[in-house]
Amino acid sequence: MPHVLGIQGLATVLERDYLMIESLSVKNFRCYGSLEVHGLKRVNVIVGRNASGKTTLLESIFLAAGGSPEIALRFRLWRGMGQVFQISGDRRSFESLWKDLFFSLDQTKRISLLIVGSEENTASLEISYSSQTVLAVPLDSSTGEPQLAVYPLDFEWKDCTGKVTKGRIKIGGARGLEMEAIIDTVKCALFAPGWGIAAPQEHAQRFSDLSKMNQEGPVIDAVKEEFPIIKTLSVELSGGVGVIHASVDFLPGKVPVGVVSNGVMKFLYLLLAITSNRKGVVLIDEIEDGFYYDRLSQIWSSLLRFCTNQECQLFATTHSLECLRAILPAVEKHQEDFSLIRTTREDGKVGVSVFSGKALLSLIRQGFDPRE
Amino acid sequence: MSDDHPRIRFKHPRAILCEGEGDRSFFRHLIDDRGLPPFDIFCPGKPYTEDGAVEGYDDMLTLFITGDGFHDLTGIIVQGDNDERPQNKFADICDKIAAAEGYTPPNQPLEVVRNNGRPPLVVMMFPWVGEPGALETLCLRSAEDAHPQIKDCVEAHVRCVDVSEWDLVKQHKMRLRCMITSICRSDPYTSLVHAWSRSVELIPLNHACFNRVAEFLRSFDQYIASH
Image 1 (tube, rainbow over the protein chains, first blue to last red):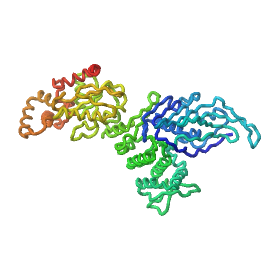
Image 2 (spheres, rainbow over the protein chains, first blue to last red):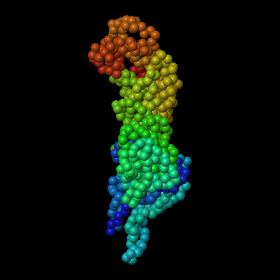
Image 3 (cartoon, rainbow over the protein chains, first blue to last red):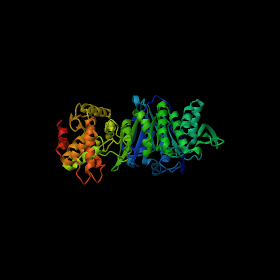
Image 4 (cartoon, rainbow over the protein chains, first blue to last red):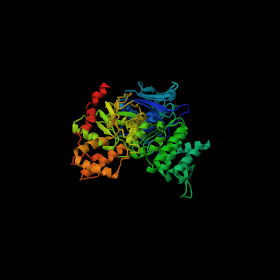
């Protein structure tokens, strides 16, 4: 009997004294057999050709930052495999869900992700297949028939204090597919093209949370400053769910912010994510997506300002030279807050080089292409 | 800013950072003409300032780090013109080296400095250590010897317009421009960038005035190894 799982929600975890991820270690995850990345800064700009591991870098941080084994399933949406999938009880079926998480599709090797932060704050995650796959024989409550439950994947998180939390994905039993353990390590939000549209109520929740604490003002001001057509923002019900609405000067009533502009919506959602992930991490795939070119400089500056104020760290991928050149004013003023991460794939092998904000500044100022 | 420089890629184990496109062209042709070891030659992409083109040296040395093959470099030459005051200009270049990421400047021209994770670096001043002038000073000597009749006409012109109050290097540049303009019928406005690409030999590179530079480039590997 196939089962269906809807994927919703972004990970948020408890606030703690986390300043910044300074290094990242990845083993046996997707395209990375073994990777060490050092010199990470407040704003990390990731560039590289297609299939060179940019998105995988974001995924590795998102996974290590924690939340739930469900995150691994959410990558399916990110990678264009949709929100819905079907599984059956045989091993080949459930293994196909996660096989691509493993380097060279080798599921016998353990995935190991480690993020090391300022002041020795660390978080790690190890993922491996259970050696013992059939662990339980519960009774199906509706039929009284015995049901096999299979635990294909073990997740083991360790936070900065060394506390270990284990989570498992369980397939079978009465409820089909279950996720065990939702834990808190590092606050983290992830934006991939299309995700903002997929979960508008989540952003509305963030806005509402800020509004309840009278802290939505800076976000609204920044959006109004960047996009003067916006007069105000508020959460309104639309189709029974909360959606952020905008009041604009050319319409008599409020409309969902996405109706006004995808760029406005994305900028708003990014600011909300940064504001509600204080001392956390925000990951953005293809940051330039949706923004008109002449907005990019100010958007970079606003993101840096919000990240600095919220002690939040940003990782953003881009393919756009225009977007990189637009970063110049922000880097000129705060080069110590930036790093350039360049991913490469040569002869089938991926690699990562990290350069300073000064190197990024020099490349742009002298007319070179930071992507190359 | 220029789109001519999409990426830094070191094809050779030696690199020269020079002030401008004219210097770059000079080095390229000198190396070809004299069969010298190959160097990758770069100059800042920023527009030159009143103070000269060393303005972008810190950027260039920093962005070298991002280039393919950087860690295979065995040495970098940073070239500059002495202009009127060799000590001051050398100090300006050292300031730029110090502002680059991970480099410390030398105490004097032709001193080899080694920094952790960076290739050895040498500053080479034109026309040579301690001598006022610029690349144009050397080029002028070569052009005047190759075209003595034009030299006499240029001298008459110089006397007529009276540039005796000008800085020495400005006078050299003015004379060289007049020489090139007077010789090169196909393009009297030929710049140093194209000065070695014309059918007429404007500035012969086999002139003895270029020997010190050429010999330094020829023996650069040994020089680095022995200092």
